[in-house]
Amino acid sequence: MYLPLLGAQIPLGGQREYREIVRRILGLTARDIMTTPVESVGPDTDLEEVATLMVEQKANPIPVLDEGRLVGIIGHTDLIMHLAEANEPAD
Image (cartoon, rainbow, N blue to C red; front, side, top):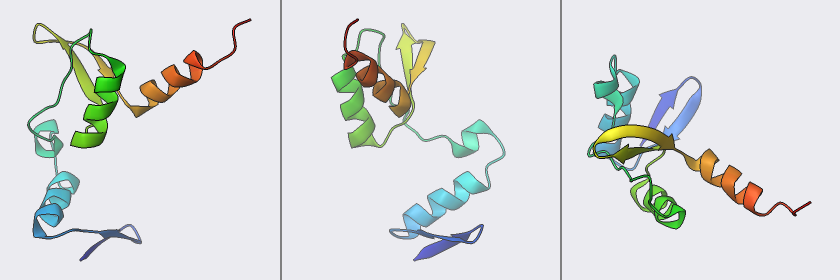
């Protein structure tokens, strides 16, 4: 099954995925398009664990919480930039 959108054909795995995509497209508030449960990490979480969470849970970006309070957000781009900086030769 495919969802036609702006001239593109988006492949769908089944009715559940189709309903999820339509729900997000038609959403008017953050609640309408957000995924639940929210995957989050703490400020001291190892970056390897963050990357694993992103891949296994298909979560991006991931909120960083400290005692239930949002202190940051980390996404794929943040991890890639960190890896690039870590691999730069020292001057």
